[in-house]
Amino acid sequence: MNIQDLIRPTIKALKPYSSARDEFQGVTDNMVFLDANENPFENGVNRYPDPHQSKLKAILSEIKGVSAKNILLGNGSDEVLDLIYRAFCEPNEDNVVILPPTYGMYEVLANLNAIAIKKLNLDEAFEPKVEAILNSADAHSKLLFICSPNNPSGNSFTTGAIEKMVSNFKGIVVIDEAYIDFSTEKSWLTRLNEFPNLIISQTLSKAYAMAGIRLGICYASEEIITVLNTIKPPYNINELTQKKAIELLSIKDLASNQIVDILKEREAMVAELKSVRYISKIYPSDANFVLVKVDDANKRYNQLIEKGIVIRNRTTQPGCENTLRLTIGTSKENKILIDTLKSI
Ligand SMILES: *Cc1c(COP(=O)(O)O)cnc(C)c1O
Image (cartoon, rainbow, N blue to C red; front, side, top):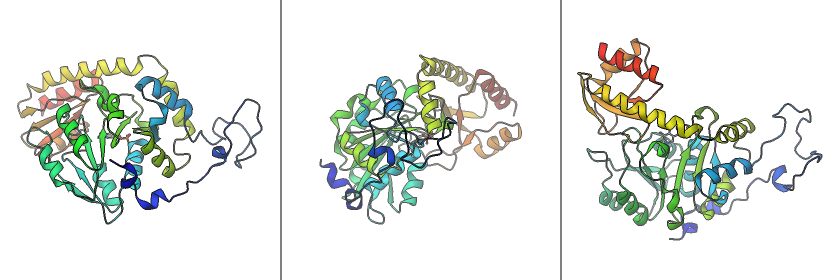
């Protein structure tokens, strides 16, 4: 597969903005910086941030076992996904394949970028219909989004199904691994080098407890990362975000201990949900949330709101009639939810 053939001609011809700090990189101590029209008075944020996020990428590279050259950072996964659309999808010409019920941003970004959408719904067990998905693709199908573990169903797709899609889809396959750190399945990061058309998207918003700093991580071949780097806003990751990510990622075992806690809480929650009389189904979860089927999702959702508990009503999503998505919180929060579910 030739990745260059998938890139939009406009993007291939683009000359990126060259920032002051791009043109000069040999930073050493005690240098005088009068190149970027910054205010010289120190307050911790008066200087532009590192446009290449070298220190942060080095830490992520170490944690994830992927070279920094294969990493691009975004202002949340949302920016990463938007950059992917803009690199590969020609407005009013190309299309993308998505597998509902799934994360809503794939569709929003397609609409925003004037890209058509082919929707291939998951089956009743929320598994992808691989043959139908591959058959639906045409010469203009540039992206296939695979969310695994999937939001809102919570399950991971089988390795075989994903492998078949990545190997046979003639465009870019994006595996969204927002919930991979909660999963019993392995990340596809270890197989990045096998598939030139593979992009893996992760985030610090879930397992790493940093939704507030907005940091999305994109892993791909150097060829793809180079293209995305050309079109990203030069200073897309601000100084505060870089600092906080470096600080929290450097605390040994912080995330892994919280993940263990959350998974324990999920097991306890599932056990309790079994005795809620109007819950007829608890879907298997490989993530930090559980999807349940109830008698009347709108009614139960509103009853919970009245009690001050906000969950996600997914009843309008394909295959999700009368389902609610429950995020796993602290043991105290989970107890409040369970007690309330049992009392209404
Ligand atoms: C939460 C979530 C994200 C995270 O998005 P950010 O913009 O990084 O916060 C990405 N993909 C899926 C499927 C999600 O559920």
